[in-house]
Image (cartoon, rainbow, N blue to C red; front, side):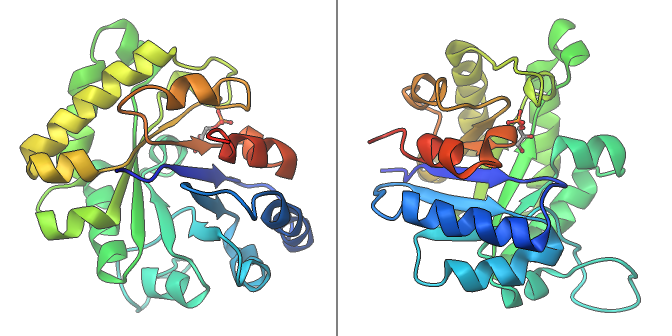
Length: 251
Ligand code: 13P
C-alpha cells in the first residue's frame, strides 16, 4: 500500500552536462520500472535542464535544500516555489551534511518543511544519529527530538506530502550500512512516532526511506524489511547503471 521511493542524492557532484547525460541514460534504463517512485536530486544549477530531459519519463526531480521564505532580500537562497518552477516535485530537507556543516537545526528543518509543503512539494525530511550518539544509546532520543522538532505544528492533512529518510550519519559514505535489523528497528520506532504525532492511518501511509551506503547488492535485504519503504542513495546514485539497479530492487 506504500509505494516505495528510490531517491538519488547527487550532493555536490556533476556539471549540467554530466547531469543531463546521466538522466538520459537513467530514464531509458528504468522506463519499464513499475511500483516504485524514482527521484533524482542534482545540484541547483542543473535542475531546469535535467527537468527538460525528464519530461515524459517516470523519473522525478528533487532539490537538495530550500529556504522557507517566498522571496525577499535573502541572498543566495532558493524558495520552494522556484524549485517547483524549475520542475521539482520533491525537496530533500535536513540532510545530516546540512545539519553538520551549514547550521541546519530542527527549527529550520520545520520551517523549510512547512514552506515546501505549502508550495506543493513533497518534503523528504532527513533524520539520523551520529556514531557517538548510537554508541551512547541515544539513537531513539535523537530521532525523537528530530522528528518532533522537524514536524512540529504540521497537520495530518499535510502528512501525505512528507517522506521521512532515516540516515544514520555513521553509515553515510562510509560503506558501513546499517544491518537490515538495525534499520528496521529505527524505522519501526519512527513509524510509532509518526502515529503519536499525527495518527495511525498517517503512520501506516508514511514512506520511511533508509539512507547510508545503499548499493545494488544490499538494497533487496533492506527493502524486504516491513517498515523500510525505499532508499535515499548517495554514492551509488551517481552512475546510471548502479542507480537503475537499485531502482529495480523489485524486478
Ligand atoms: P551514501 O549512499 O553515499 O552513503 O550517502 C547516503 C546519503 O547521504 C544520501 O542522502
